[in-house]
Amino acid sequence: QVQLVESGGGLVQAGGSLRLSCAASGSIFSINTMAWYRQALGKQRELVAIITSGGSTNYADSVKGRFTISRDNAKNTVYLQMNSLNPEDTAVYYCNADVRTTILPRRDYWGQGTQVTVSS
Image (cartoon, rainbow, N blue to C red; front, side, top):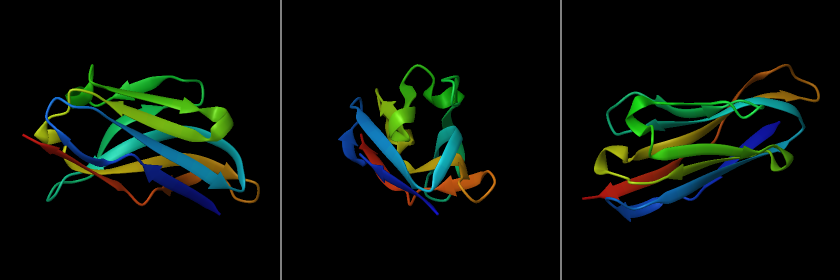
């Protein structure tokens, strides 16, 4: 089994910054892509940022220039540095990883989510 544990969410004022972390653990053989999604109240879950094992990244237009995704392959951890936050960034943020375990083929795993609230 694989567990994804997120941390770093919280309450911040508009214009502030937060850094989210997500650590993967378990019987991991390899991790392909890692990503952050978010879901605001009453809205569908959306992709925020994604990073490949080689470090290539892609971002939602709404966060380009403000958010930075990175990963530490040795620690099986992905980060999301969020700067210039605004109230529209308020959501539950979920970590996602495409993982191959020692006994199972590749599949997606999800974290439990961490709340980010930006006050105006």
